[in-house]
Amino acid sequence: MNKPDLNTKFDTVNISVKSSTHYQGLTDNPYPAGWHSSDLGTDEAGKWVDKVKSIPKLTPPSKPPSGLIKLCRFGRTFLNLLRRPTVVKDLPIHLQMESTDACNLNCTTCSRDVFIEKAQLLDEKLWKKIITEIRPTNINVSGIGEPFLHPDIFKIIRFAKSMGSAVNCATNFTRVNGRYQDIVESGVSQLKVSIDATDKETFKAIRGEDSFDEIIHNIREVVNLRNKLNSETPSIRFNFAVQSLNYKQAPGLIDLAAEVGVDGIYFQYLEYVDMEDRKHMLSHNMTRESLFDTLKLTEQKAAEKGIITNLDIWWRDFDIFWNKMQPISEFKPNCKQCYFPWFSTWISADGWVRPCPIMPWTLDEGRMGHIGEQSFAEIWNGPKYRELRAALARGERPTRSCKTCIPQSLHNILFLRTKLLPNK
Image (cartoon, rainbow, N blue to C red; front, side):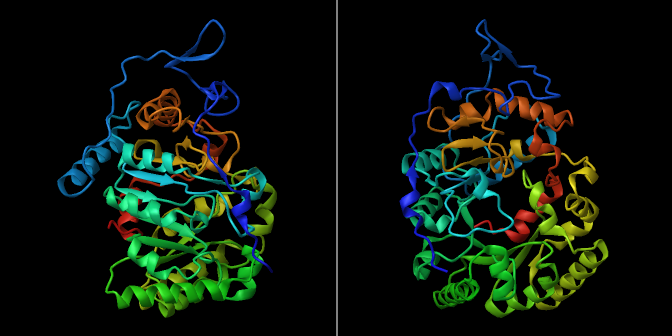
């Protein structure tokens, strides 16, 4: 299969945004079902207006987050996670900044083909503005697309590192083009390589392209160069989206990780946001017992080989994950609390700010504001963010994405990052 050249599809984001994109509610419906507005109202023309005037002004941190400054930001963020206020007086410590939504693969687990009509690159004015205003301690420079398709990806990584942030990215690792030295010397903290298989045939069936050997070769080259230069970074982990085609290969993935020098594996459950039509294809031929036994065996092999995983989370929430794989008619809502709008944010390649990594997978939900039209601080405590926080603090699930989401627990937020995501 010839690899398509996606450069011709790129559309650099125009910073200006039409006034019609101003506040419409968290979804296309200005009055979502079950939404109890407290801070918002409408003017005589029926437009949404913000009735709260006394929002504290947030200023970007004057210094990079390091040492005592970073520790203080972590402490204040931890208090925000416990209190969950409607107005947050601290900027987020975690940022997912999507460098591009273009991708060269067509994976069965991804609904990108449904809602991305024309791929875009995050404009330099925007990514510099974002990083400078927020100065997060951790930045993920990937999103729906493949970050190595952005021609300035190393420039982005180096700028983020110069501002004191640890940088990671999820990648299919097929568009490295021999830039191994750039990868190691850029200072990127971690590469999260989406692999989903231990052989070429399964890989192609899931990810639509026969590039399995290329990915393994790229990993070996980066590991060898990293060791040769005596560099601590990047660490490399596998991302493995658990589904019927590959779950029995999970134990073998431990062997592959140990062989090529991968440090850890993140076993990912599928979200299925607006993908109910694909659920049967992705989760059929799995039984609860078979999945459980396979992952238990995988955990044992990981311990033997010294490979870090997140399988402890699967044991705590296995029934919830399994229920997520069943038809929507059998879905049982979970009572987990969401913490994302208090410590993290997502900014898409088109400049729109979203509150979490789930809502970007929909066309109509969670557009909190555009970074080209407002400062991030204005968006962070704007009416949409305040309404979302207030609803979540009341235990509500205000959007379609929220209703079937399995939020990360406070324990996972505090410890999973330090376990599987370096802080350098």
